[in-house]
Amino acid sequence: MKVALAYSGGLDTTVSIKWLQEKYNAEVITVTVDVGQEEDFGEIEEKALKSGAVKHFFIDAKKKFAEEYVAKCIKANGLYEDAYPLSSALSRPLIAEEVAKIALKEGCDAVAHGCTGKGNDQIRFDVTFSAKAPGLKIIAPVREWNMSRDQEIDYALKHGLPVNPKKSRFSIDENLWGRSIEAGELEDPWVEPPIEAFKYLKPLDEAPNHPQEIIIEFEKGVPTSIDGVEMPLEELIMELNKIGGLHGFGYIDHIEDRVVGLKSREVYEAPAALLLIFAHMDLEKMVLNKRVLDFKRVIEHKWAEMVYSGLWVDPLMNALNAFIEETQKEVTGEVRIKLYKGSARIIGRRAEKPLYNPEMITYTSKSVFDQKAGEAFSKLWGLPSVMHYVHRR
Ligand code: ARG
Image (cartoon, rainbow, N blue to C red):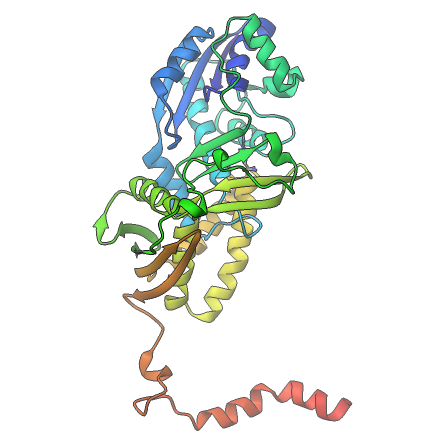
């Protein structure tokens, strides 16, 4: 049997290589997809081959991830449970698709991933694998072997696998859109995450003592420049992770409802994601009318739920994306943000085609708003409420 395994280089997937050989007598092909996790990919390849992989593939998908996945998330203001910008959730369908492509090309009988049976990631991989490589068997070693972390380390050492048991007590999943941090003492929701869990976030007392202002420009809902410097989306995001993190901004700590019904304490750092979503939401308020804004919130909620629950390939996603795309035509403009000690204040915005109309809203004598219209308006607007109040009390 020939298996294509989504390989991160971490403990679970490294042990999986050996375990697939032992349990299924499999030839294992490893596939590592770069979605901005800033790892040493040469070292990962070496690790895979040393652990017994017969062939290794590396795919740089940063641009694709930014343009085809993250850009949609920005337009959708994608925040699961109003908190989580879906960083891990968005990367899974892309990684699974790349692995499926290689599996088909290499004539594999199965595809494999290193997800547990308790989480959401298994669903995202399983669903995408089933859609993109129908007919191939899906193997999830971690769901089958039932080993604790310590048992996995023993297994690895016994088989001479190149693992580093001291590397981190946390389970980390990282890409350019954010870093998920789980396990260790974080399993106690009362315990504050220690600063060493973070890569971007500076502790508040070490963040600069002076605020920094940045301007983010958007074109049709997609960010294009920081302080007037245009850059490809994947670079712009990495840059904002650094700027936001320097000021200690981008911290997320919430109790999250997993698809399998469990509540879990999830900690993330996602400076760029939060900056971009907050800035984008703000600009939308300048250009979209109230009804579109209101209804878009409903669509956004559904969008985030779908992505979170692994249904990227569902036709509803295309329909939701089509609605969202239609709303983004005029979302072009700039947002000013002031960063300071863990906060990011939006301090100004301007749009190419705003609905905000200074001539109407101004308090000065220049106002062109017909104030006389207000009298009849409030009479009729409040009529149903006033009738009830006057006649029924
Ligand atoms: N709770 C997040 C999600 O479901 C993060 C998952 C992170 N995965 C991991 N292997 N640590 O998207």
